[in-house]
Length: 83
Image (tube, rainbow, N blue to C red; front, side, top):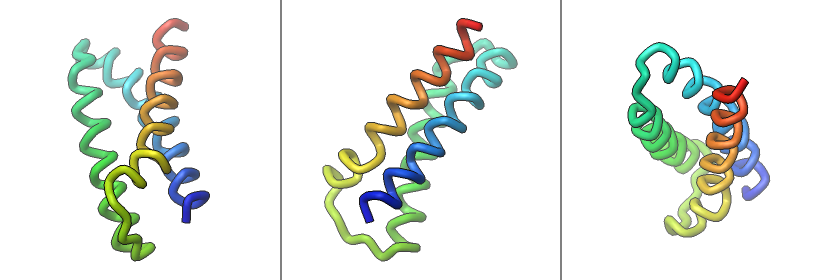
């Protein structure tokens, strides 16, 4: 389960990083990107919880995907923003 959730959150982090770069260029509002990130993270957690039937506490979700997703989102967004 850890590999599946970690992989999915990694892919989502990279995609959200690029989308944040595009949205920052359109709206000039980086605060909106954080709101979108949090909403997508909770939505992904809920979908994975239902699809894979995972009954784990929140700290399991944080350590197996959410932190990785946030770091990758920030790294990808920063790389594209500085190009």
